[in-house]
Amino acid sequence: MNGAPDVRPPSGLLTEAAAAATRPLRLQVNRLTTGYGKKRVIEDLTLPPIVGGSVVALVGPNAAGKSTLLRALAGLLRVEGSILLNDLELTRLASATRAEHVGFMPQSLPDGVGLSVLESVLSALRTTVSRGRSGNDAERRATDILSEIGILSLALEPLDQLSGGQRQLASLAQALVREPAVLLLDEPTSALDLKHQVLVMSTVRRVAASGRIIITVVHDLNLAARWADTVAVIAGGRLHSLGTPGETITPEMLSSVYGVAARVEPCSRGLLQVSVDGPAD
Image (cartoon, rainbow, N blue to C red; front, side, top):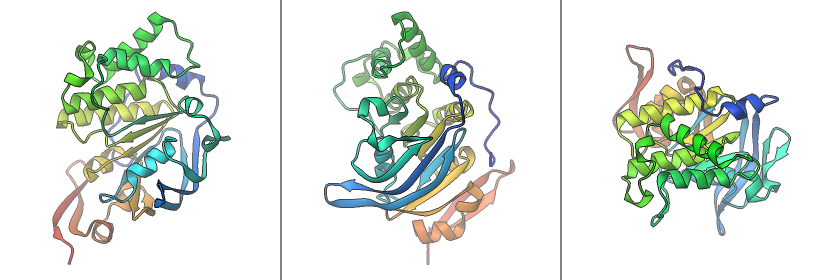
């Protein structure tokens, strides 16, 4: 697991869908092109197959195309190319059907939402039409998720009165509660303190342990090195490199992609640590 801490099997998190899985998941992205209007941001991008149980971190400088790629995988942008989940071509599915298979956590929730945290999670669960849960089952599922990520105490708080970090955690709960096969997270730790960064990333690992595919945009390379199985470096809308953290997070990559001189060294526990010394010559 490339230095990622050991995690226990999920305790109530995504267990129903994991038990229902009949074969390992496999996501294949082939020759994907997308953007905004006439502007192409991602150009002819292909990823090696991503299998269930994997956490893939998308890294790269600002405006590299990481969030655009994630939105395209979520079905929020028009695309050319193929996104295949096992034998299912996701690009051909209606948005409601696609949401059955793919969950998406945006960078931030929209402003002016008057729902409580619990109501927002229940609303997200109801959009997944095939679950067929009773009202009590749905509420139990929602409260279990809130408890898993440590915000059950916020269940009755209005979303528009939460801090940025609390809203991020509520958004994660909305994505998790649907139990998607593929979970897409856009900078899930950007507004969080150190404790909640660890909580979120350990939750991500538990979700992956149930056989799911996690693809997440991560700006902190030390977080990516610690928690991800695979790191995909995106630069200029294209795949620069992909592999284990040790294979991809190197001084050479940091110089050519980020423009910095940096050291990549193991800490006392053997985990990779990135130290930036300054701009690259």
